Each structure stands twice: as structure tokens, then as C-alpha cells.
Length: 104
Image (cartoon, rainbow, N blue to C red; front, side, top):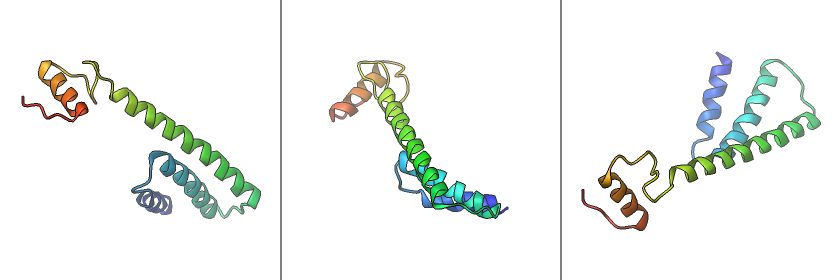
């Protein structure tokens, strides 16, 4: 139960953070909470290593999110969050991108 409470607390604290920062924060806080529950003593060296690993995780998560968003915003009738199904979808997607409203 304590683990679930910690997970909910950590998740709520990440609201408003970027994907990368949220992943980094979650990794650090989860590891620290695990150590507290296990009554494990972490040295400054341990904590520094945890933070370095979490920072790398955060960077990877942010890069993956940028790639995912870039993949969703392919234009030219290709993709706009999901595959456009017809001419109306493509026109609406391209109008959104160019800033023009399109009436369907």
C-alpha cells in the first residue's frame, strides 16, 4: 500500500512537467522511495548515480516524445495525428497547419 501511495504522490507531482522532466523526476523519486521502504541507506555517491541515470532516462524519453510528435505531424496527405481518411480530413488537417479554417 505504501508503494501505491508513493506512486500516486510522485505521479501527481509530475503534473505540468515535460515528458523528459517527468520521467527523470519519477525515476529519482521512485528509487528513493524504494530505498526508504527497504530501509536501505543510500550514500551521496548512490544518489548521484541515480540522478545521472534518471537524467539519461529523461533525455531519452523527451527525444522519443519529440520523435512521436514529429511522426504524427507529417503533412502532404500522409498523417495528421491519425491517417486522414478522405479529402475532407486532409483539407482540415492542412488548413489547421496553415492557420486557415476549413469548412467541411
